[in-house]
Image (cartoon, rainbow, N blue to C red; front, side, top):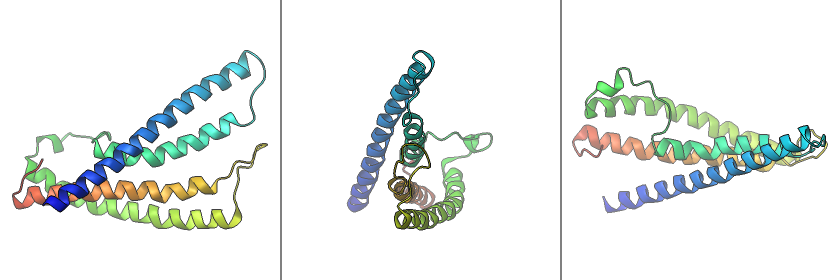
Length: 169
């Protein structure tokens, strides 16, 4: 159990780091988004690179925020029936949904790796006036999804412990 507690701590730390990266990305998007609007509408001098980097940052935000949101149970849920279930039934439902989650994350990881490899091979850049490399971003997609998978596995172990009687919910 001590080993599993250390693993849980490492997974929690990874998700916290991802969340902090997400906060920085949000600050970047807000700051430069406002700056771009001011430059475009007040000074009639739009930038060539800000809107592209904001789009890039939003994709990166989606990659890093998944693990943090799942770990903090911040995803929007429809708790119409689920909220009334006892902890053991919730754990069984969560184990079933983990199977679906794993399939989805597996496809995202494998296809993300393929897309990243193709992007690296082509040295892919944005098709804009300022060519920004895309292969770094595409390489981060499977990394972010893997972090989500780690959090999902942590939650699965907690659910299994709840079902067998070592309640941790």
